[in-house]
Length: 250
Image (cartoon, rainbow, N blue to C red; front, side, top):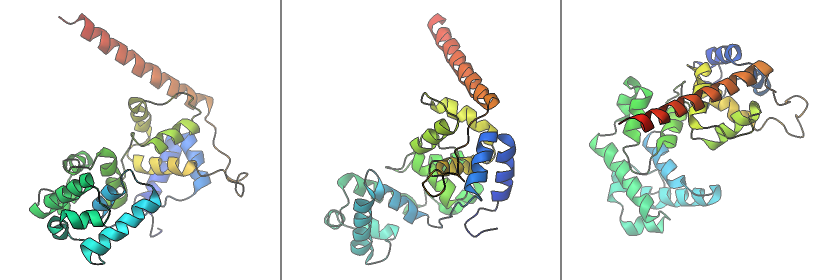
């Protein structure tokens, strides 16, 4: 097992190959699952807040100043963030809104309402609920934390645009997938939806000048495409029935 592979990597690859021919071909092209684990907790969430809505170089510059000015060269502790003045945070490039978010995160960790030691005993949705109770942390950030920091195997980030675009491309779907549709499609990838997501992300990087012949993009079979169409029809029918029921209700 590679050091950058989760303990469930081999099982995930076997399951996904058998469950989805399109994904199976992507796996053959991409190779072993390499989902690098990040051990940080408070650090990872604070960094995610700092990087929100910023381009890479700008975010890195602010991150560097934050570490230097607030943490004296090391990543600040929650107490350091709480004690930092507005002026010090502004000097580091932290906006007023992000300063509020960082202080709220630090306060949650300091008072124990966000206790990372409990996470090993909690379900994914419970963790998402706790994380999103912090100002500035949304569901997507919580899902990335589950995947990369906690190595949870069954996360499906339907709000991730890159993932959604990759699925549409792999299945040759010409109209945007709704979150409900992507969730329904993801049922076949359980209990390794994190691995499926990672492979779809990688699939967008397969075709380059150097490896175009080796990494030809997988085309969906007629049967797979038909399943997707049927799934979409079912969702539309369910939605229509629900809407009609609401109209007819007294």
